Structure formats: C-alpha cells, structure tokens
Image (cartoon, rainbow, N blue to C red; front, side, top):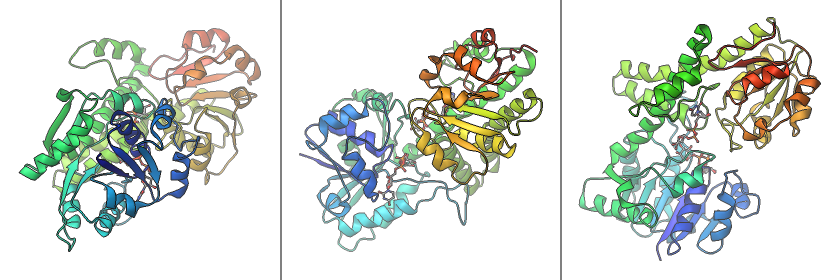
Length: 455
Ligand code: UDX
Ligand code: UDX
C-alpha cells in the first residue's frame, strides 16, 4: 500500500487528493495543512470549498484511505510520494514585487520535508511555479546531511474551479515532468502509475522538468489571452453594431480556432491567470526578453481595461452619475459554480462604483462571505443580500458579474417592477436574454453588442 501525502489543503490539493483516493483504493492519501481551521473543515460536513461533486467523493473515501490532518511531521515521515500544493502568490515586496512568484511557502515546505523525512522520497510540485524552481527545490532538499535522496517531479494541475471533479476524473491530459536521468525516469513512472489507475495511458504526457513547469504557465497564459482577445473585440463590436456572440460563434467554427473559451465577459478572474501571466512576464524580463514580457503583459492590461470600460459604460448610460444611486450587484464569484472570489472582476467594478459614491447591494449564491472580506476596507455604502429580490428592490441598475444559472430563473418582471425607473441592466456576462429583458422594460447593456434602450 503506497502512502501519498499532500501538503496544502486548498482549492487544488483538496479536490485532487480526494479524486486520487477515490480512484486508487490501494493507496493511503493524507492531506496536511498548517491551517487548523481548514483541516477541521475538511473533516466536517461543511467542506472549506464549494465544488460540485466534491462532497460525494470526500464522503466515499474519508476515514477509509483519505485523511486530513495537521500533523505534517508524521505525514512526511510515512509518505512515499509527497505532493506540494501550497500557495505561491505574487510577491508583494522586494525584488519582483507585483510580478514574481512568492516562493517562501514552497521553500518552508521543502525545509520541513528535510527536517522530518527519514527515507528517500519523490517530491511532486503541484503548485504553479516559475520554470526552474525544481532546481532550487532539489538544492534545498539535498542540503540534508543524512544522505537522503529526493526526486523532484513537476505535475501541474489543470483543473478549473466549478468543474474540478470532472476535470480530475476525465482530464484532457496529465503532465508529468522529471529529470532525464534513470532515477528521474523511474520517479516519472511512479507518479504516472497513480494516474494510470483511471486515466488512459495516451493522455499521460511525460516531459523534462522544465517543459512541464513552463507548460502550466503557458496553458494559463494562452487561455487568458483568448479571453482578452475576445474582450478587446467586444469593445469594437459595441462601436460597430457587430455582435460578439455572432463573431465568436463563426470564428470558433474553424477547427483551428475552436469554440471554447471565447465568451466575452467583464474580464477573467481566478487565482491563476493573472498570477501566472505576471510570473511569465517576470521570467521573460529576468532572462532579458523585454519584448516578450511586454507582449504577455498586454493580456492583463486588456483585462483591466475591460472592467474599467464596463464601469465607464454604466456611468455614461446613467446620465454620468451614480452617486447615491442603489446598484444591485448580481454575482461576486470570479465565475459560476464556485464561492471563490480571488481576482474576481467584481471586486474592481464594486470599488470603482463606490468611488463614484454609488450604494451597492451585493448578492451571490455562494460567495457572499468572501465578498465581505474582499471589500472589508472599502469605504462606502455596501450591503450583502442572501435574497436576490431584496438586493434589487429600489435599485436604479443591476450589474451581472457572474454567470450563475440561478439568475436566469429569477422573475425579472417582478424585479423590474420593484426597481427605480428608468431601470438599467448591465450584463457583464451576456447571461440574460437581452430581447426579453428589453421587452420587460429594462434598458439593456450587454457586452460586445448594441445596447437596447427605450430612450
Ligand atoms: C495553490 C497555488 O496558489 C496555485 O498556484 C497552485 O497551482 C496550487 O496551489 P490553491 O490550492 O488554490 O492553489 O491555494 P490555497 O487554497 O491558498 O491553498 C494552499 C494551502 O496551503 C492553504 O490551505 C495553506 O494553509 C496551505 N499552506 C501554505 C501550508 O499548508 N503550508 C505552508 O507553508 C503554506
Ligand atoms: C484556470 C484554468 O482553466 C485551469 O486549467 C488552471 O488549472 C487554473 O486556472 P480557473 O481559474 O478555475 O481555471 O477558471 P477558468 O474556467 O479558466 O476561468 C478563468 C476566468 O476566465 C473566469 O473569470 C471566467 O469567467 C473567465 N472566462 C473564461 C471568460 O471570461 N470567458 C471565457 O470564455 C472563459
């Protein structure tokens, strides 16, 4: 019975280990974290993260071959394979502040591995890291004075929040990078053998360490670039009466382009896109490639432009003032089916509206707690509403920030009747049927399409 340990019980480590335990009953999987509250939540009925399907998987395995604990030392001692999935946020201080990855948690984790290990281990990087981090990891781990040997493997995670369980159960690919030595290849095979329990072999790709580390950054950068590309064109559509949905549907039919990830929006959020692109930008600068750095940085600039443009459109439509007007914010999570609000464009939209002295009422089915934390230091009039009908009552405008399906089922006639007139609807996700909303009486402002107004 192989013993797997995961250090870091977050959005990545939590679901990933649950699925490994579920698909590999012959392994014992332990997840440890320094955060006691988080571990207690993983051991309770109220898991610390919301992810469709996660509860069932955890319930099936917890206490059988899946364990959550704060005893990091014991976990390290017993493990054959250690996955490291601690957070690697953007540095906020010193060299590379605002761009480079902050690797202090990773280094602390490596040091605690050498402190507690008493046998050779495979250490798997699950966290997204700058390319060549494995080299630093290896040097730290091999600074141990007991002659212990560690093989570093890069096995980046490609799950998206909201669909994590399906992404893990049926991945497009599993990527495993290792050193091109005999021991490195053996370690790759050991990690591949875990996934081979449920992933077809042809989907398990093996590469050298550096390709694997870089692929994670590149995958996220390419995805984010698609969103920024589409969002940039949405601005042009609004000026020219082209319709972004028609444009992307037609362009996406070209199999070389493909239909996915072409939805115009208020902008991308989430813990990874911005962080990983900044990381890429920093690396390019570090390696003396300023033109490449600038090229990728533009993806982030376009994303920031999109949310500024959204607020500017709101202001212009509402007679150039939102001061003292109530605005209902529908959705705060960075996308549907998650309570995660990290880098959510809703944060920046709300802050801009507060600067304009709007009164905000925020509703989200899963993310209200996080919204409160995100806007803790924001000055102005904010209320948080569990009930969407309460949130919109007496509002001058609705701004849709997240594409929750539940919003489509709301009674918009009732909502319209309870609002101030003229009633404005700014749909940052093109979620609602603009024609139907216009018929009800709203002045509708979708993304990348002509506004439909009664003026
Ligand atoms: C993290 C990284 O942010 C991401 O880049 C990577 O791809 C996967 O891991 P996520 O799981 O979303 O993503 O982060 P988070 O939810 O913050 O979880 C990290 C956990 O590690 C936290 O629960 C934290 O308490 C824990 N941790 C952090 C440790 O156990 N030890 C540490 O030293 C630091
Ligand atoms: C992403 C990657 O998809 C995943 O592979 C990686 O492991 C982590 O980062 P995640 O951040 O969970 O996953 O969400 P994702 O579905 O990629 O969406 C990111 C952002 O882009 C969201 O804010 C989403 O609303 C936005 N988006 C996505 C669009 O605006 N338009 C699209 O067409 C797709």
